[in-house]
Length: 308
Image (cartoon, rainbow, N blue to C red; front, side):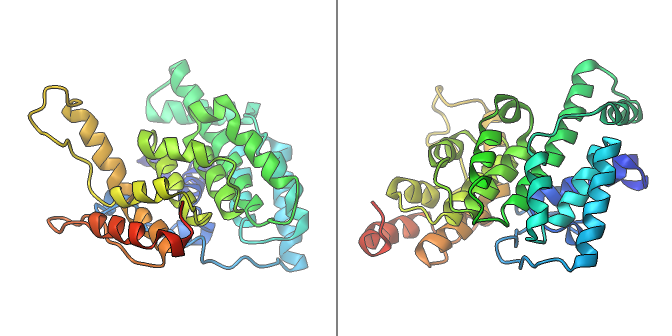
């Protein structure tokens, strides 16, 4: 696409978008493979293993100055970019900008940028422009969520994340923000959205949200036996139990289910390893999954694993 080649606001947003989808620092996100390049699933996430440090005074000052300038300009793309860089640090000065980001709403500058991008893409309908604005808002909100994941001891963080997560407009229009909020709540060990994530394992409403939901249970190390067995089953590629059953959903349904499952299957294995300490493989080409082996192990060891 032409956007990626332009050193403009739209180009910056494209780079940040990769960052926020992966939950990784901006510097590594620019080199990340696209989903189309990775037919086996999503690029692996390493955000739970990456170290979060305290920024030196000079670096912190630069970040805060850039944030203030972007906020003053009403530039959502620039805000998202600096928040992505802030997500590598845990300085208390970053808490307020991150909390404010959860409430971000598109500005006049964002609307102008969205119209310019719409013209570049050849789409100027009201619905398309609203979607572009939602993406700009989501990028900022997701950036704020990633920063807040670095503050487990601050009492206002989890309530703020939950309020943003429960927002109906966010749930409906901003899957990238929802995925980031889930990730942050998971890293902070909050079990407040466990029921929502259980539903997401069935719905697969968005591949990024589905991925965050799968990883959530590994992050909080769920002790819900039903959920763990569901994760075991998700090691297997989705397909109809009886191909010729006239009551089966149409082929398009299974195509979407398989695409989303392919995107999250490695994360299913990751979460099961966090919960059980064992490595169970998902389906891989013609090689069968460890779904049955995993379920048998979980049932046999549920007591020692604390599952109920």
